[in-house]
Image (cartoon, rainbow, N blue to C red; front, side, top):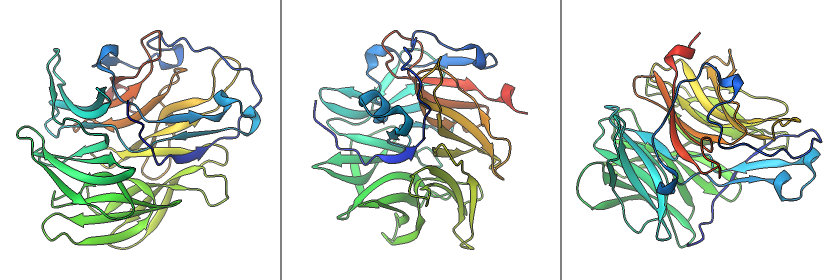
Length: 337
């Protein structure tokens, strides 16, 4: 398989010195997840692509001063009519885009071929999918029709890495990340005029339903690279810190369709029964009511809301003995408080 060089977003936790714990990946859910209703959509033989995750503690580093690195952009997308899941699967050395019916069955459509796709997002009307492709150690942004044809349109290409695209509310533009060295900035691209505009520092942009507020991740300024969740109003220029913790990092935010809540990935500190890992959390848009949703020993990553807001789709290592990743859905309406 071809080697893909990833721009890993650094999110750090200072972990207690605890022994390494074996994970029972075969378990579908743990007691702390008793209220979760889970549905699995893919099989292990589909080779679902997951974010690159590096746990230094698993590679000989001092557990008391270890970090977790992971690729934070979304590797899942849900069609606006809530009928299709878009995800990535590996085959013949490539990572391509696949679509699967949410209603069930084994029907799977391969939408791209011989490409190294890194992340993706549906347009508001469901007609197109925008994605990042890695080629020759460069990252650029492309668009393809979601349901027909093979034509791929390149939208953005510069000397920097461009990645993590998401559509504007009217579907006429995209917001994306430009990575230059260790610096990450949010830009927009107007599909009709090709106008490029720089907005703010950050990565993993997701747009509020009001079309003005961008939810982004920023690394903390204390030198410890802890991920923080911020809201930036693109019209007023105001910036609001939503979620930060002095010990652990958060990233991969996705705002709910009603604009009231954010789901994100956060680091859970290890203990004698569970190693340090990545779990899913929700927080209200005003920064209150931080709630941990998943507690499984494997990693849970790349969360996205269903358009109705009643479910959250994500990638997880649970439910198979080897810890392979699959697409899962949790019912969220029954968890709301």
